Length: 259
View 1 (cartoon, rainbow, N blue to C red):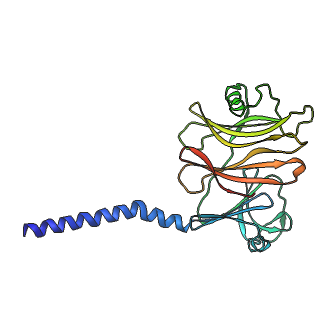
View 2: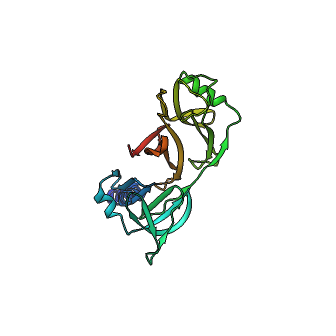
């Protein structure tokens, strides 16, 4: 009788352990499998997420399949409203009565089966060049370099209550100076540690290279840690590369890119 009671207790403990593990892991895994979202960045970048995979959609059929559906529209990272989209070389927005709605600003459109917070960091000028000089030195670039972009974006991407500093430096598209080497570099500073994000360094061949800029910070998987969209524009709007980044194992990695 005593052994039977022990078996029953052991069985109950085993069942409870299985239930707890399912609640901790299984439910989250099922929920992640069910997550689905479409991100439209600007006029020509479409990323779709489902079954834990990101896909870059490029075909005309993909654009057509996304038309006349309602999206959460953000312009310059500010919520603009919920509107229907239609594409013809660029995206056009319409209300529920199919009245045209102007889209003025950097477009981000989201269609998802879960809530995705969208934030914009605070842009500031750089007064202290300590970290910039360190990065220039790391890439064997002159510490007396001139810049066409030199600023930082403050944002608490890991939700720890402290804003991280995201630096953007570049000397591309210069009009009043002609550097031999062109560079565009993006990095983050956290706890006095420099984390590389993006770098493009090449010889100057007249207006080559691209200028990076932050578009949006988004929490795409509800983990309180933000991903972000970094774009890089070429001269005269020839083309633009959009890149979606996340922080994984103490470094920034590209989840998906439009290039």
